[in-house]
Image (cartoon, rainbow, N blue to C red; front, top):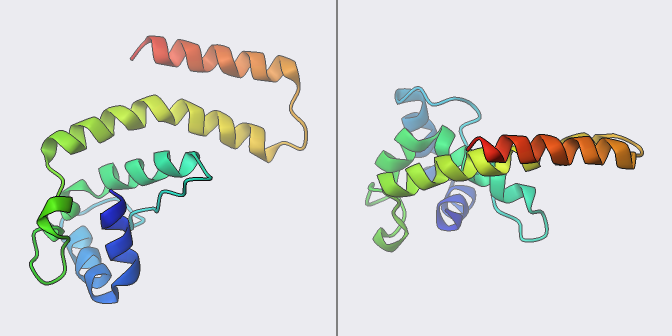
Length: 125
């Protein structure tokens, strides 16, 4: 997914074509693919969620010879299914991180409750 995010960030023409395809395919907003930043583990979740959100447009856009990505970087339906599964697994961690990050100080008791929430969510997947 990194090649897709890079292409969209560095090529205004590719981004414009992608935005058009997002509108045609009625993808949810925002119409962008987040970049995965190695020092921010939540960025992996955000990137994968953005791929799932824009999947229809991505599958069409990548095949465009002028604006798409090289063939070796193409994704297929199996990649999308895997991404959907990863979003389900990573989402509880993302939500908990957001809760902890927005509070000035988080108590140990709150963290224990959050761990229980994550455990319960993951056990149902």
